[in-house]
Image (cartoon, one colour):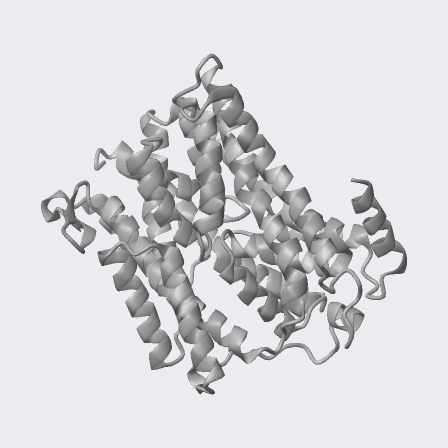
Length: 464
């Protein structure tokens, strides 16, 4: 930690951008407390505060960093905060920005997990989460529309999104395969000079942003990539990530629930690309169908918790880890086991996020303006729209229908709804939430609160 302290002192004392470490702490805390609404809302908050209000970073550099973060496994909004914090105040700034971004969510999800585990079978709590699930469905659909409007700006991008949806929904093609294929197509298209793959340009502020003024034409030492620095960063963050995993395996073996949590979420941190919405499709397959840690509806309850609290939606994984250990506590009390399971899931999920940024960001900064990279990132963004659409349909199947029938053949692999099992109350709430969001532009928190109240009212009326 001495290196981090030294970096903080350097940043505080002689950084040319004029943004002191204490001021940055207050701004990043504000960003964290306002980071509701999933990645689209969180990125919008950062853009408004960092680009428009504070003028810390230019529009073009913000989008360059965002496109890199969307290429990484894990939550792009948290990684974007880490990236910008690193540009401002080196490693200490990245840890501060990325850590603060998830801290409110850790505290909130843990508190809600206690309530859910202790009182989840009480009718009032069930009704509360019944309403949440309907609102979450509408919010996920809104995410499809928001990202789609920006990414699907021509027929080729629309086609990429459609192919990605068909591949993951009907044929269960792994998400990394879809991402790699889209990236290759985008890279080749951009190198060939196809305008459809050009990066999206957005207007930004006229004044030189603080970070851009600090970096100038020549990258400073902490931004310039070097092999010794890359090796040091890899060693430190791999040890922080993997030592707890191997310690659990050696101490308790692979069959222990804590070992399973450590292995599963470590693997998830490496293969789940496209942010929280894409992550959930993978987690649902494994945590629900393979490990049986939670049920499909409990996954939706967990997402409802993440939607109502600040921080990344991927914090739902803390809830999954909590419930897994809570139901298999061994010699520990269930609540203590759940707490440790939730924190373990969070640690192995987010520690790699810092590794990806601190290792890769210096190289990405040297590649600004590369047309091939910009084309690859644009194509990947389009493919992610198709994956989010897949998730919205998965949510709809498990929210509006009480039963689904798996369709499995040589190639096809998807769930078919049982139309006679439709839940009229859930459908009505989902339509009402969607109408409030799309027709009347009602805020997300208002919709979530209203849906919770509606769920309780329906419970009292005997409708659910």
